Length: 230
Length: 239
Image 1 (tube, one colour):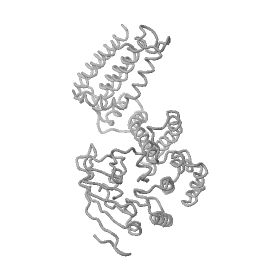
Image 2 (spheres, rainbow over the protein chains, first blue to last red):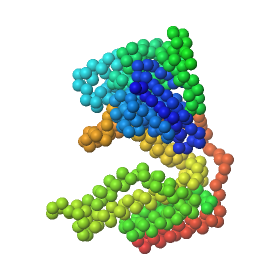
Image 3 (spheres, chains in turn orange, yellow):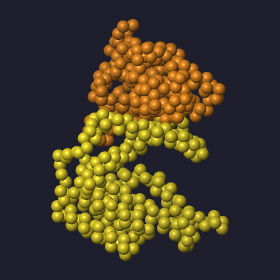
Image 4 (tube, rainbow over the protein chains, first blue to last red):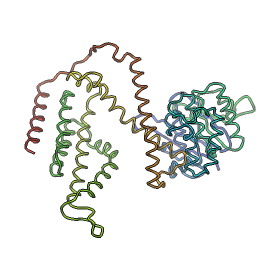
């Protein structure tokens, strides 16, 4: 069974005349890194939000391991799929960086000692230790992005959707992030990368899906080390 | 009906004032009918009232219940042992308060018939300082953003695996209380950034502003304002 299955999915925003997504048919495996690329306004973020149930498809079906996403609560989906928003400001709400990273774990009933251990690891790994007690919205864009990514990856969900994860990151931190994502992919946690950053995508993705005006116009699998096969 | 934005502001002020002064459902119900009639005259889709009211349903329900329980007097309609829970006076007070909210929200829809630019222009021509008029429109524009911010936070919380519907009320209140600070602080931060962005684009660079357009009253504006102000004053005096 595929991890995510989208069948004839359509989506349109109430105040826009054109469809944001049109006839999307897609099967995504759990143990792979799938990238979604495309120009601005092509529907990449909308597709990510439809996959995770933040937006409900106006037509067609979205199944998460055979179960309709529309019949699941956001919390049920969130326990299985982590989601990093395109804009970190939308997902940061705690009073300190440490609290932000540990929020999901605390609320899912993790042992306090284990929460502390995981939070400490993430603070160190994402080079946020000095900001442990800082209000997240006061950080720079790149730092906020790192907090947002850390607060999602810390939960060890079986799958992650990252919407433009490299925005605001410098080359060094991009490399660190790529290494971490490759590491978690190697232990069977799949992901969807929504990105403009072709260098990052080519470095990581096993499969690249190209969107244009809400339609899939390309779907290629990695062939060897250097290219993709359509 | 093409009226000057300032005339429409006067109409909204009159209707809202009466809604605040009136206390009984018998007075508020005709006021609501007049308001709805005016919306029709301004070619506002009546169904849009429901769209706006839907957002306040929970608030109205809470207000209604509180009024029902805490307003005493009249016939006891529901009791728990010897303790009266709902009285006829309480029920009427609850209904009146809900009607008052409906009238104010419906009247405010008249603002949607002109642009925020005209709103500022209208206030400035009434000698209200431009900065103050601009602040009012920004505040009006910020309110939906504030709501969106809260919706985003709630979505983000749920996506971290928290089943809000299953969380106990105590925990839920605790959760929302702890969220209040970051949401309010975030809004203040945005306001500060907005101020910097505005000033960097020359806001208040010159002490005197000029305007391309001018709003001009015509006879119908004077007539409508006179009628509304006179009727409102008469109703207030005779109340």
